[in-house]
Length: 159
Image 1: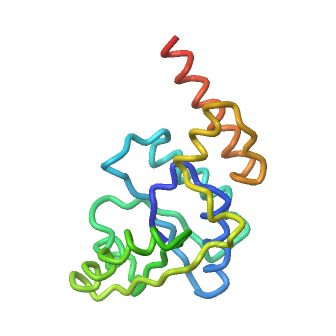
Image 2: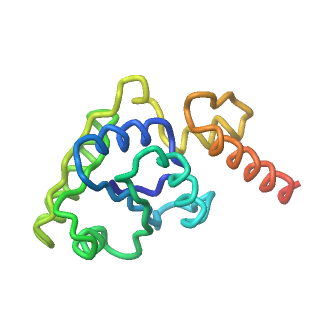
C-alpha cells in the first residue's frame, strides 16, 4: 500500500488493517511526494507507521525511492492496494494503475475506505492541527503528539 502518509491517518490505518487480514504480507511503501513539501521526513513517517501498525505481524513499512512499480518488483509484490475515499479519488487514480500494469504487470486493487474516515486526508489533518483543532480519533495519539510538536517548532521559527 503506497502513499506519502504525511502524516498517517486513522483512515490509512483502517485500510492497512483490513488489507492485513486478506494478504500474508502487506508492505506499506512510504514515498516522497515530489509535488508537495513534506512536514515529516520519510524516516519519521516510516517510524510513525511502524508504531501504528505494530499489532499486525504481517505488515512491514519500507521507503519507496523511485518508481512504485520498480519497488513492487524489487519486493516481489504482484499487486498494490490503494484506498479510495470518494469517486474523485478513483478518477484521479485510474490512469496510474493502467500505466503501472503496462510497465510491470503489477495489478492495482482498490479498497473503499470506511465511510467514517472518508473525509480524512493528511492535508486536512495538518490544517486542522495548525488551527488548534481536536484530532482525537483522526490520527493515533503518537502521531497527534508529533504533529503538534512539529507545527509548534515551525511556528516558533517563523515568529
